[in-house]
Image: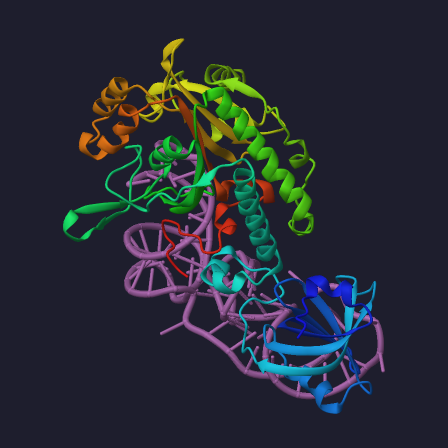
Length: 431
RNA sequence: UCCGCGAUAGCUCAAUGGUGGAGCAUCCGGCUGUUAACCGGAGGGUUGCAGGUUCGAGUCCUGCUCGCGGAGCCA
């Protein structure tokens, strides 16, 4: 039996179809009634005219409420007056379930109210569009790496110690083995993967227990982390810019309707093509000073600093060679200046902040041991990681891209909480 | 943890210290092309909680709870 979806209605012009879905909205003008039905792929207007349908079908319309589920049959007809361009001349309505007092009405609602009913909010047009863009971003991420011969290596969620030793981790009891922590990055495991497979990517959820309360933070978020053996910092930056170009191009090509629903100005997105502007940390500091910001060389950039730097460019900007002191222990130092790490961040335009952070990794055993000591990290937990420098160590690099910040930027959203189906924030664990 | 803002009908918001209202949603009625349809009617309130000032508090003051935004930290 043929399954009909609203998204594909144009294929069935003039034919009888059966749509299974939910009531999105309805309007009545006495003897002619309009039912807007959604099925997850789109919305179609169904017309019910008295005298053209049996009496009981005409009367069923009055029983239907917003989000009631139903199966509707009728003939597809091209109709410019209908939203979507096609409408259905209804012949039969089968009510499956009547929804009582659906809380989201066709009017404005506050963010707090909607967040509490996130499980229902996902049915709304705007949230629907965002989730489809998110899906396209994730699909294109996999496509990018898969088509370049990368192997997906899943990193564990439970870890014995902090990967970077800086941020606050979620802690849990792990049987008789003591404390375990939820991962804040799959990178160290990715490095092991790169030594085994050459080029790999880790893609999974990560967790940060910091009490951040900003539009850019979640406690649980998704990160994709490629790692490539033999790549230096320069190779890493090239990979990152090709990667971003691919993601943005895929969304522009395959999700243009959704971007339109979100009223996203796509002219800036169309500019995301390599090469991206590259500036050093020191040059970024100069930009801040020129803009009247009192910034001390050696500090890390804050949210406002990132906005000022990125506003100088009309596409994402790569900032490289940060002071080693503000960066993680595993980053290789710049041979030309020991104070600098071979790190690079990519700042998204329009104030969306850091979407990519990466580096060339320290590949010398003795140096890495020294770094672990300097950072007061437990040596035992890193013995396996040090093995990667004991047995055929090679230069290698990688980066991490935050999926939610990327979705927020591409969709042009105010807050990352709308970029993930069920956001986890400091004060929100439900639904 | 710190700073700022907020909490009134199911929802979004009004209400000079002086009888708490409107739109949407719900229910009833009308309309043969509606576009967040429209028109008429009805029901719906311990104004977040606890105190205080006042003849009188949704409104002013204090404390608390919850939420939002920002800082720090980070992707």
